[in-house]
Amino acid sequence: MVIRIYTDGACSENPGPGGWAAVFSTQHGCKIISGNEVETTNNRMELSAAVEALEKIHRSCSKDNKYELYSDSAYVVNSIENGWIEVWKKNGWQTTRKQDIKNKDLWDRYLTIRQKLLDDDIDISIIKIKGHAGHPFNEYVDKLAKEEVLKAKAKKRRRKVGEKHA
Image 1: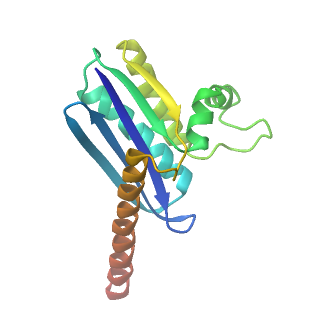
Image 2: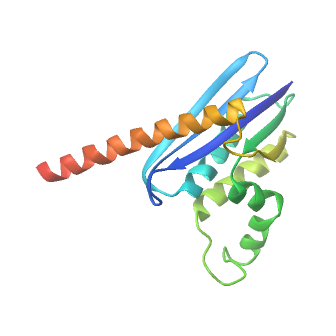
Image 3: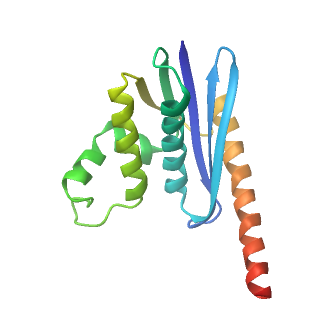
């Protein structure tokens, strides 16, 4: 069976409150995972969605399935498909211009989970999908990520109120 996973991240301001979401689509229905951060970036949320989805596959999915992970993030897809992360790691987590890589902690998690999935013979394809082009699942996961942004904004407001009363 093919399981398609659609991922997206969103951020209000950049940096600012952000959210991520992933929708697992099978012939039997959908499963959603999502989360947020009070202070983050859009790229971090895009990458978080992909990493969290892969970790979910490792924890609870069958290796008899084939997985396709769809992302509208050029940052995520190009870094993986063009081998940029391997070059960054080889260069001590720096770009060719000797600048530190952003989101190193998430890239480390990605490499760890990718290796575990490979060790378990779990087949995953990473596929670029055009964002905001009317694809129903891409639009849906975008909506879910934006809902998580609202949750992060609410957390941020509560923290500010708490700080005033402390």
